[in-house]
Image: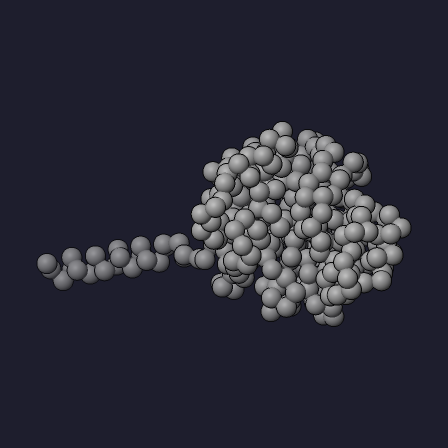
Length: 319
């Protein structure tokens, strides 16, 4: 092979390497400058099979958003905070579904998220991700999403919440009354006087959901609230002074609950709304996932004694 031929091949190879896309730790992405960019950050494996399924849940929500035919781009980062420093560039909203408290993946990145929030980016937290330590992290959450789970103030019981009516808000579009069992955290620490915070899903919790006093089980304040029959706000939204939008959703323990159309719709509505988009008049539409689809991307292997009838009964109940 001549030297000139070798030189031409070398230049061609260099051009290919230069224009080739960088590989990131995102599981999936669809790109368009005309679309709103929704980034979902999924925490690593956490609980047993079918619960706290952060990766599978985020992938399912991203898939549902693509089904909606809305002008969105979805990017899912699995197993924790994205490693690349430019991963959040161009995001219109950042949604976190992960463990919380001291393990919250956002805690090491509070300054980064706060800078993004101040540019008007939306922020949403799902289930355990609404809990962070009181202090700097809690103060940021009050600013970003309007409230958070505060240790020794909020509680995390499993109970069936009944949603009989909804306030007039874009995030409630298309919802019909429903009830569903989940680990519904409640008695959040909200901004003083609920300033700028709009409850979206509210239900009355039985006093029996307050257990003995403990960090997440019970305390005098929450016991008094439950005994008085006060509505507990399980999903809420806020519009910040910086122009950004935020929301918190305390359900999400049971992965199978994503097959409930109302449960799924309110979160999809909140995600789209937090990205600064107009929620469709009937809410964000998506097909009900099948049992096979629900069981895709789960972190744990299916237990030998697991029976699909357990899920099928739930799906039949919700139809």
